Image: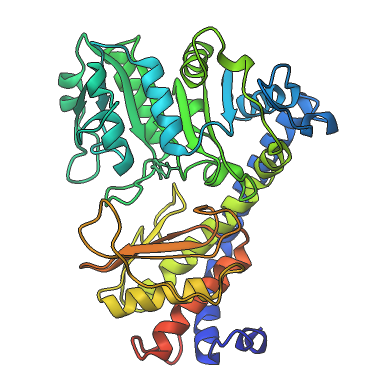
Length: 428
Ligand SMILES: *Cc1c(COP(=O)(O)O)cnc(C)c1O
C-alpha cells in the first residue's frame, strides 16, 4: 500500500506511521461493523415489509397527488426508526428547516420551549429568537428557556425540574455536540432525560435534533421515548446519495401537524411532488448504515493519529462515539490551513483547488473550509472546517467510504509533515 499511497504524494514515513496507528484499531472497527450490520438489517426489513418496488422510484410533478413511492419511503423511514409516522421530503430544504417546521408546527402562541442541554445549534438561535430574527418563534409569542449542562457534562435535573412549568409544551434535545464543546449524548442518556422530563410533565413533547447521530448506535432516540426525531438528508440518513431533503419521524399527531405546517392546513402529506429524487433517497437510506460506519472509522483514526502526535482531540481516541464529528485542536493557523489543504487534495471533486481562509457571515474571524463533494455542502462526505482563531480547532466529519476517509486523513498529515509543522516519532 505504501507505494500506492506515494502516487498521491504521501511520504512513506507518513503512510508507515498511519498504518502503525491503525493496527490496534481493528477490534474497535469490528464493533462498528457489527452496529452497521444491525442497522443494515433494520433498513432492509423496512424496505421489504413495505414492498418497495421499481414503481416507487417514478417521479411525480405538480401537486404530487397519489405519489405512492413518496408515501412508501415515508413508511420505510417510520418502520426503520420505529415511529408511527414520518415526513421525508425534498421540500424540507435542510436540517434547520426540518427542525423549524417541527418546532413551529407543535408550538402555539403562549407555549414555552425548553432546551435542557444548553445552547442549541447556531442556526436554531434565529429560529427560536435567541438572536432576534424575522419570523422567529419568539415573534409568534413562543417563549424559550434553557438549562445548561453541569460542568461535568451531566444533566442539571434540579434545574430542569424547576424550569418545567405549565407553559412548557416542547422539550428540544440535541444529540450531537455539533460545533460546541459539550459531550455528544448517547441514546441511552437521551432516554433517561426524556423519562425524567415526562415524569415532571407527562404530556410534554420531546423532540430530538438527531443530526449526525443516525445509525451511529443500533437504536435511535425514537426507541427511547422521543415524540419526534429530526434530521438532514445531506448528513447521515441520506447515505451521501440524497441530493436534498430532511426528515421528521414521530407520533402521528406530531408529524401530521408538521405536514400541515410544511404544505398548508388541510393539505398536509397529500401534496408535494418528489420530482426525480426518490431513487437517490431510497438508495441513500439503504447505504447509510455503511456510510456512517466508514465516517466513524475515519473519526476514530484521526483522533488516535493526532492524539499520538500530542494534539488535543475531542472526543479522544478511546471514548465511545455518539456522532461522526471529530475536533482536533491544531494550535496554529498554519497547521489548520495545512490540514484543510490535505482534506481538499484527497477529494474526488475539486481536488485541484486550494482552500483559503475567508470571512463568513456570523463569524468574528476568517473561516477555512475544505470539501470536495458530489452534493454541495454535504457533510456526510469528507469535509473539514475551522475558524482562524485560537485554539485553531478543525472540525471534520464524513467520508463516503472508509478508504477515502483514511486517505483524506493521511493527506492532512502529509501536508503538515511536508511543511515541517509536525515531526513523526520513528516508530510506535
Ligand atoms: C447540521 C446540524 C443542524 C442544521 O442542519 P443544516 O442542514 O445545516 O441546516 C442542526 N443541528 C445539528 C446538531 C446539526 O449538526
